[in-house]
Image (cartoon, one colour):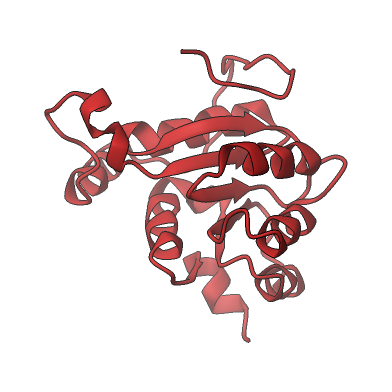
Length: 180
């Protein structure tokens, strides 16, 4: 079944984007977390967290889907903040992963709308920005996960698990630079 999109075709990756995804480490982590099994993926679909992804760079969306593997059910991908709010309203995912800088409406603003409307309580920022002011603004908005794109290969899955469990997650580099 094809994934719903926002009108933009899903673009196949033509060149690699380095998200530091060490294959062996990612596979080992997925196995330890119970995200890799010998069973049928469809049989495990009911217990997989349901996600909506937002980024205005299609190549990043492809990479994120690869990091997530079969352990998550990606309901759709969108390229802007307004489309993100609409998708979350319609699909009611367990978690949202969003870039911070997108057209029409940024990730912080979209995340704030999603949280205020009670559409989803698990919102995670996936960004290349590590400025303390932006981290603080994001967390004060109620977004409980902040993952740097360069660390997504190792940190995105633990961030999703932490936020779905009611906690907060900051990439290692962020936690060193930001103080509440």
